[in-house]
Length: 274
Image (tube, rainbow, N blue to C red; front, top):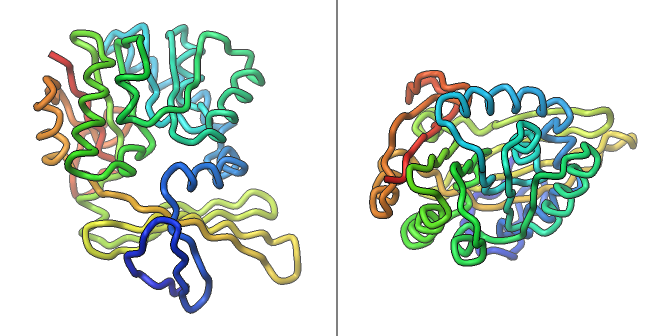
């Protein structure tokens, strides 16, 4: 696979040797992904695992209400609600939010609300506050560094109760940028295969989802691409302290294993609003 690694604007089409792709903004990217997102991310298999780590975090950080920022199709938000936690899920993608609502009805979970809103605007649009905010699944990498990141953290700070906990889960970019590992995940479900991978180039990464349909003799494919901004701890900490949020602990995954920048799959930050 040889994909042209040029820095193009959102909505522009770039041609490579093997395929064409369109650089999408995050809302359009996930609107296009929503139809197959649950299959690709194994939604049905994740619920019990999510509830296990939620109990672990609740025992340690003591929260009764939570905002799932970047909720996608609702996996974490629904697991939080299933544990009796008052929950709201937000996402910039209308189609993801629609899928989240459908999943809530399928699972017969009622104490959860879903809204289409950006991270930057959430603090002004949402009138509730929360004991905890979870921004998981590498969601924050869609936010540009600098002003946009500061607006997002300020928004989160506004939505947190005093002494509330903010949990940010990212891929461990210290490792990824060092090893230049392109492949994030490969998964096949029946005749559909999904490959998630990076193109490296400068300070911004191209994040790709290649969807392959094997039902015909000659496989067909669809490629979607968006930008990722590979935030690391130092940059995030500068923004957090501006808005009265201090890092308490850094973990290497959502199960609270110790963080090792050379080997940990994730960077998980637990930060407290003072």
